[in-house]
Length: 91
Image (cartoon, rainbow, N blue to C red; front, side, top):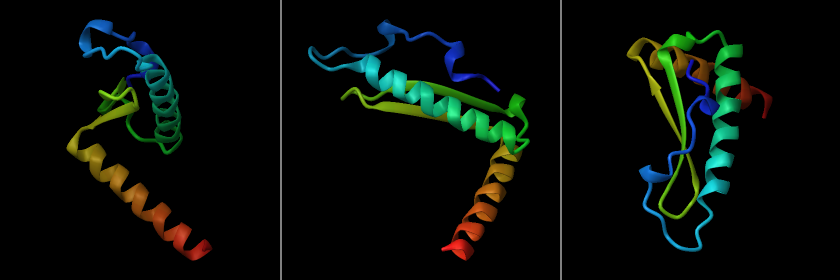
């Protein structure tokens, strides 16, 4: 699995607006992507079929991009359905 911290922030890949704190959004997205990566690893999702990328939107908000192979997307969908069912029963 590509760890979100593996890639450095690329300042040339964004449109800069004066006064917008893009780094804060990127740091937040990096932490969130790491959490998601850890959760997917804990769920035994095939890490070679997952890519996570931290970035920002034009307003500086963090953004996490998730790329999955079709098989892995089905596996993650199944995990989400099981977790949703457990949350409904617990609630």
